[in-house]
Length: 177
Image (cartoon, rainbow, N blue to C red; front, top):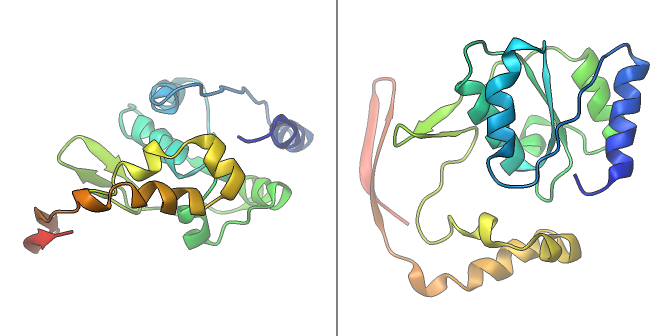
């Protein structure tokens, strides 16, 4: 989360509505996965605050847990692509309101190479590294453009990959960029 003020607002809104909250902060990649994998024993819901990467880690952890509890999402990252596609507001108060009063919406989860879960995009190839390699300072300074500039660095690496996608009774296999 970019600001502690936003976190305080979220906790205040939750406690004001009768929720007991525990805040677990991430400091490195993998933290959200580790937390989510162990929370099912103690909590009725996980509220993920962050961007697409933090949400994906949270879902990955939940997929590894024994009991699947609901995940609410407050989009506070740079791009928040999944939140935008789901129509979730970036306004913290409105997003918390949906987390508290909204209805559960089942969401498909994919599995990539039998090891990586994904929620809405599975990427491979030259641009896969872009979201991870883009510095947080650059994202804070120029937003989405930071991803574009980082992607330009990889233009010489573009090559096709042979891919096979299976979904129920449909199989698609070809070379893709």
